[in-house]
Image (cartoon, rainbow, N blue to C red):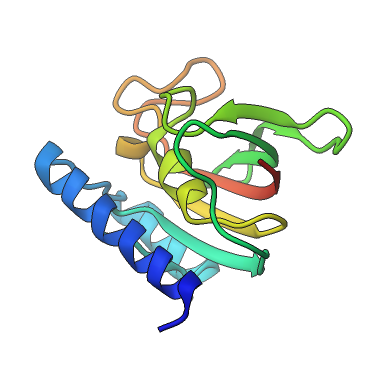
Length: 153
């Protein structure tokens, strides 16, 4: 087993047990599930319910808890409505992994990404802004779609 595969496997196992302990698993509405199957049928699903598609492989090892990540992103609702983005590599979005500064779906996804990797993330509301949403841009129980790039850490 190569190192990257081993690390990814350990990350998935850790994530699985964290979410089993918490008793939560992300789910999608039947309407969202139809859209997901139409648009992203090849998405990989994690034990938490997060789905993703690797658009471009990265290099090296994934970041460790506490590291400051530099990322680009475009976030949209499942209907395509964009609610936020950062696309300037000179001024990327930054956060510390494992410090609760971003939604759970991001924490999980970025734990196993590598420098330069690009993904589409399909995040159920339980791993995003939950039952309340983040009004006015993100409604209650919203499935979120992110196009993300891990620039550096």
